[in-house]
Amino acid sequence: MAERLLLRARRGGRGTRSVSLRGRRLQRVPRGLASLPGLRALSLRDNELRCLPVELGGLSRLTELNLGNNIFEEVPEQLKYLRSLQKLHLFGNKITTISPTIFDGLEKLICLNLNNNKLKYLPPEIHRLENLENMNLNNNELESIPKELCSLQKLSELHLSHNCLITIPEEIGYMTNLRMLCLSRNQIGVLPDGLCKLRKLRILDVAGNKIQIFPIAMEDLMLMELYCEDNPLLQKQPVSAIQEEEVWSLKKMKISRNVHLLPVRTLLCSYKCFNHPGHGFFGIAVP
Image (cartoon, rainbow, N blue to C red; front, side, top):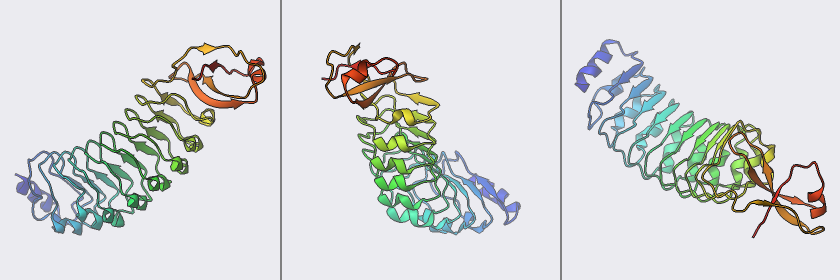
């Protein structure tokens, strides 16, 4: 069946721009794909592929490749020869490792989808994907992300939900074009101050973590959507100040679209300032 579909593509001439072999239970890539030098889009998703032939690297004009829902255990090294590739989908595989050499030939990549794999580690060389705008790493086993990832200044969407992350690098503040950051369902206890430098950030999802308090400059963000449910944000009820002249780190409550009270740590000069009317601060007991 796959060979017949490929023959149909050939009848369209060597300038065939798109081929889909989705859901054909393929265990190998059909011969002859490399003879379509004008191919721009190729879908091999929903098959049983675990490797790619070397010849596939000859598709020098390929801009979109979908290898989702196969059984790859690593990102195929042949991909580094696809120097025109802009969109790469590898979701729903069994990928545990990424070779650093992969990034040498993917400088034009804009979208990378690695959702639903078994990744525990990202190589620092990922910074070579300097044109990347959208990265999807949901539902993996990542325990950390390299600070080098934060040098991807064109990135506008970063999806890291449902991993095992404990911390986020302070260098995330370098991702100045980031508009959406999804970190839900991890083990994050503290958000870095660098997060507050993301002036273009509009959507932040940190639901289902272990966050008790937000960075001091959180109020500087121009968020349109904030999701922070299922975090231990408030362990105590707000209380009135009882000491007059001492310096304390307090928690500031800020009204947000998706949460009634947002605790943000701030430093006031004294409880006298805290008791002064009109500033909108509330304090809670800090053990």
